[in-house]
Image (cartoon, rainbow, N blue to C red; front, side, top):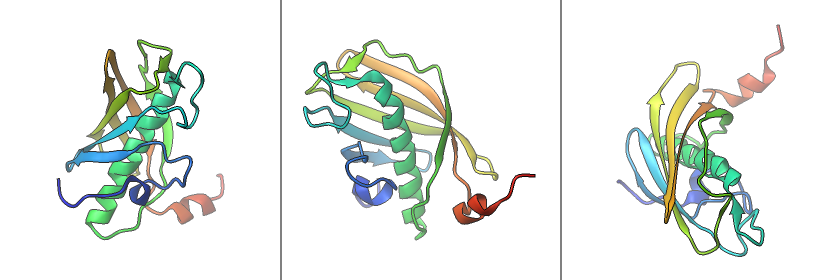
Length: 150
């Protein structure tokens, strides 16, 4: 791991939608982030944060990976899009208040068109979730939005 990065500086979400707490490690192909579930966590219910929010934790970890990768080469942080997920199955309905979750993402594929696949995992006490996220990170977001349908 090189220099430390604040999660809010590398994920293109403002508060309160920036859901991860810290970046623990990153490599050329992946990143590890942490989140601790608290009473005031976004989406928290009486039983904790619904497990479906884990897909967003994974997506934000991918965004953090892309943001750190951009910062390393002195580029701005860019917006990306979560296209789909495969095999997201949780052993619980909620992440309970007080649990710390490790969210790791590793790039499986890279594509010049901006399509990428990441192997993502969430681990914590009695929790292990694995899924693949398909993401689209266009090189030029302004050009992408200006395109007219064929």
